[in-house]
Length: 200
Image 1 (cartoon, rainbow, N blue to C red):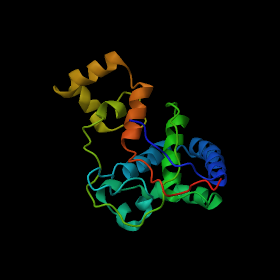
Image 2: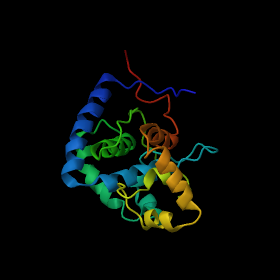
Image 3: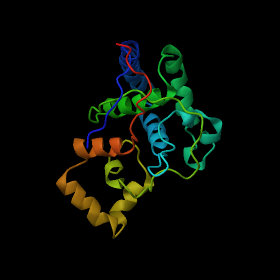
Image 4: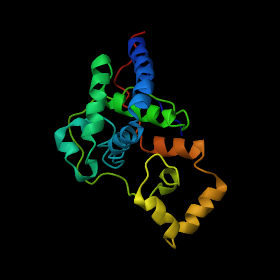
């Protein structure tokens, strides 16, 4: 099933493209891709399919959400992106954080991921504890030279349950582009159809 995304105004689309170029240089210069990607994941990962709440709508910048235990340290990523937001005030924080995550993947050699703008900023923070089960999608984030190295990466090779799965996945493909896109879009609850419509 194909998702329908809103078409932003020409001015908004131009802002997205200019911001994307700025983010490429900024993320490469600051070597901040891991924390930017973590912010994007923690923002999108709060979406709840049943209630249609949470998700990548900029609420992660709120002190209440940054105080969630799982978000420890993400205030750095929020602060890093504030000067970019000031340069591109037309973009919502929600779109900025997701765009930065897409650029972080690309800057570090990952696949090009299509970006669909149109997320509004929301004020209602998601409840704590909404991040996905860390054992789901593990094979996409693990590896000897992963972007975000965790102690669990090494533990996968020692665990009697996970080691065969890790070896099987490695034999099939080493994080294929399609798997990565599925993982990224799996976190995207879709975009509202009432925001940033073109006036043409």
